[in-house]
Amino acid sequence: MKRNDGLFRLIKSLSKSEKRFFKIYSSRHVIGDQNKYIQLFNAIDKQKSYNEEGIIKKFAREKFVKRLSVAKAYLYELILRSMNVYHAQQTVEAQLRELIGNIQFLQGKRINDQALRLVSKAKKLAIEHEKLSFLPELMRLQKHILENQFYAGYKERVLWNLHQEEQELLVQLQNINDYWLLHGRLYYQQTHSGVTGQAKDLEQFADIAKHELLQDEQKALSFSARLLLYKTYSTYYFVTRNFAKCYHYSNELIHLLESRPEVLQQDSLLYVSSVNNLLNMTGMLQKTTERTYYLDKLHQMMQERKYKKNRQLQLKLFQAYYYHQMIHHIGQHRYQDALPLMDELTQSLEEYADLLDVMGEVMLCFYSFHICFCTRQFEAAYQWLCRILAHDAAAIRQDISRYAHILQLLAVYELKQPELLRATIRSTYRFLSQLSNLSPFEQLVVKLLRQLPQLENEQAFIDLLTELRQALLHLYAEAGGAQAQRYFDFLSWVHSKVVKKPFIRVMTEGDIVPTTPNNH
Image 1 (tube, rainbow, N blue to C red):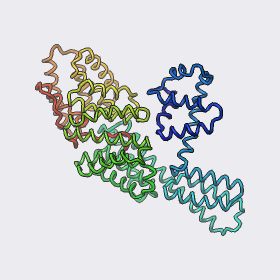
Image 2: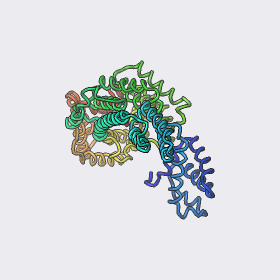
Image 3: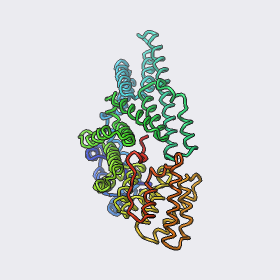
Image 4: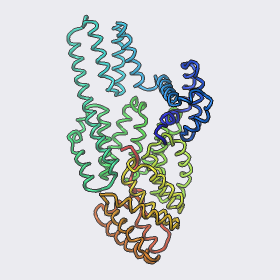
């Protein structure tokens, strides 16, 4: 999409009920030109991708089109104002902001007793729902109201209690902030290096994990801090491939969320992401019953009316459900059974195109490639990889970008298109040769690519693959050397070409590297 498509993405993110409310709101709060803004809204909403030239052509006779950027900016702000009203009572954050506004109004009118009652109500709501970031502002207002009353009618211990309350809050907020930084650093490292298994990357993960806050769970002083602690633990054990411990902390995270239904109701997205992570581990550890339970739970949430209004949640449910369904079919070698998912997935990817995060789309495409390749739908397999590589490499995980380039070679070879194959060999070689930290497997691929242009016939190619098969067997026998095999069954594919038999993928679900997007 273009950089100036912010209004388009905002409109496309709205649910049907939100769009309906906006039109009602606009008709009541815009004088004179409301119909023009609704017309502009509708015109953009009907577009599948943002086309400003089409908008200009459609409204060529309207005055506002001469200052379209101004009209779009106003429409953007109008939508946000309407959504603020629409969601005013639907989230705790919105309720707290409204309460703070009411407190400030009452304070300005010097109706201090009513303002203090609302302060108590807001503080109780913030504490119950773990919205601690609102408390400093509420305490500031409480102090100001006491000042306005010249502290008349209060005992001195009220001041000390408020001072102590804020001191304890600041410690909690600092504690949460420290855990946030640890989790952010670990997740940043995972996003940029992926699951490489290389010593220098693992050392960076280990350095973060050694922090004193991660050595004792009791150091997490609040619900929010404990959430971050479990997320950090599960991320660390995920990237270091300790799936048993990753499963344990993923489970602890879900139990923690379920222990606070009032918080869970407000943050269903976090719950779905946590279930997604746990499903990765149930697959790796062959916990079939638990896996089925949580897959059914995701499917049930997709059908529940109260969740259907939340398009972001529906998107997350869609990603998690289809991702794990594909993984399950691949791990069971039931590729034909998974083919109906491809049609559903393609349709859903189009439906959520304006909301889907890059890594979410990339991982769905990555496993779609596997299903299509193993059912000999090589053109479709190649197109799924093209969708991955169409993204900026900096926006996706390094390991997925690298393997997508390598797997594209296999897909193009199976397509039997010599010109495309030669071009793909050149582009893949350029890509890999520019990288400074090639894994042993990638070094083998680079060596192969150097030799391919020199081959004179098919037999020479088979001889080269025979050498590659031996090199792979030797590599996979070494500690940590089989990492590449978890992204694709390269050994079986090479062997199929050497013996001239159909490729049969022999990996099981426990062999597949979990590469779920944006959750750990």
